Length: 376
Image 1 (tube, rainbow, N blue to C red):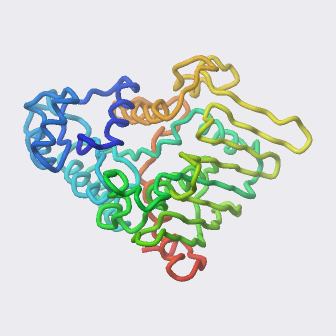
Image 2: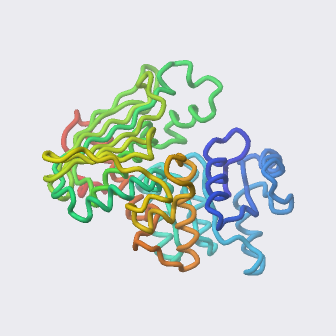
Image 3: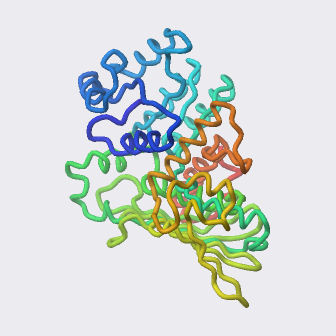
């Protein structure tokens, strides 16, 4: 693991998810840019001292020198966005596969550099767009793909939080500080941090790409990158939609919700109640689908990624674990039951970075329509 040491949030999530997945073991790491802190973090986490490194450069060099059956196989990168590309490219070139937190990089150019390195080296790479790991999100995708909803007409997605709604939220908050710093977060704030999750969820469920966007991004006084925004978008299949991403919506802790409307039916899923999926039709009673390993109406592939019977909720960590488990199987050459990779691919990640760049371009020009195919 690179990053994820003392004071970090997402590193612990990755470690718990990998443990739940059951096909991973954390054996080495460079957990901080400060060697002393990295070693202290490794001791706390339980990584052997001789495989807790002072820098990621040292880790890659020393691990590469070990025999094949002793060295690491995969590098998990859980650093702030500006430190995604350098270690990701170096890890790929050193012969290691990579799992990396979203967004793929701080800029589209750096994201494309990672993609080029993956293509050049032939190594595998996965991006942790967590919410695609929920069983009922996968069920929603399957319903759309089967034609049960008909052609998609409209999508409404929102991801709203309130943890940056006050000026003093940045004081002494390591996670907030880097997310509002363009030198570390990249060009986008909320649209890069959570807007990419919303856009990815739209594309995952519908099976279509966002092709054009008209966005307006904003920020509280004194901030340098967006903490609030909304957009209209168009889909490759002809449908249209709206997307809101904000970290200043007071009262919303982590409200990711999506509605997808087709010619025949509409569906609704909300991350804060992830074990229910509602499907509505004009001339029939509304259905509510429930998650659970013993729900016979779910496909065997969906039952296989759930760990508890219906009524025993699974959530964020388990969804994250499903991504780790799927990537682990992919590395071992084990095909998935449903033919899906089970994690965001490089194409998905580049689409997310293009979405960010197009949103910024649109907003800077006064909320004009931007065709994503024109983004270079």
